[in-house]
Length: 422
Image (tube, rainbow, N blue to C red):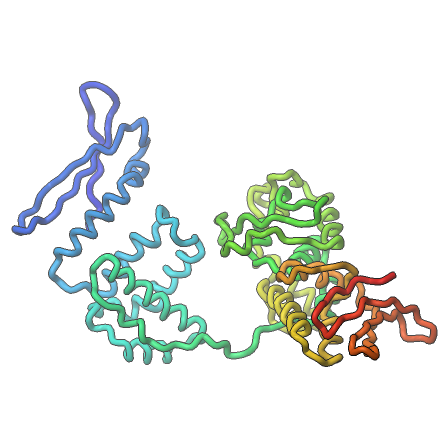
């Protein structure tokens, strides 16, 4: 692959200009030299700026040149071709995190094993056997398999090869063990032993289900305290700010009144509280960057969890699993489960907040989950009426004469509106 030559030329009149020079091999085998004026030094102050303007031209030159090369291409050359075009800074097709993961898999696993192999020598069964022998989890092997398929699709797109041998490679992505899920009492015990910063982070993660990158990408201007919701518009991964992972992540997320109080309390004690400041701005970086998420989890949250007897190995994504499990249990109840025990289980997971929630999206269950940690003293009693409906009572205390409050009747579990009739 050629990168061309960028030269700075003087002119008799006017400012200096940047000239890009390259060569191609003709059909007769002779080398032909070309040159092009990119622009003036006023428009491109340095060579890097001038080269960024000819990225597309370089891609076209090398794509045309590769088609005329008769020597077979190796996996190492294909990986170079893929990195220069798909993983460069100028390419915005993939996120920064994806590019970093791709580069790590290429340098750590794919290149050492396959770099000397020609493209035609790669066999489906050979790759499948190699993946089974890797000392990695099945999900990691599946990611390597998918990356190899992406690389070969890249070769087909640029007409460097005519098929994808990875297409028929079988590789399971099934987990070795079920994901770790923290129980409601464990989360409540953890919240009671955390400081205001970590407590706000955990409560925000559990009640909204935001990703780690979205949690630390929040700014105060994204939160509407008056309306009780926030807008997730960015994420931050490895210190690089970018868009959210999916389009669904950018929808407004409702926040519970308890979470609003926690955020307001946290805002009163921080130095950086303007609309353009990070919600969890780092003092070390003078508010220019948010805190490093893994450092907070490792130094503060996990030790606090161990101090209250939680020995589970969890991470930020574990809090998303909790909200997902609570939502799935609610959906099972709404699907005509037909048993009082299933309904009672769903209530114990955290749907104890008084209010009407006609929407069935994952984000709207945040207020019900948040209320769990502060209303766990209530006990739910389920009674069956003569017409087949179920009526739920909440009872506070276990002594004689305990106060009861009636929930609305649920006709055959087809509605889950737990508004208090008080």
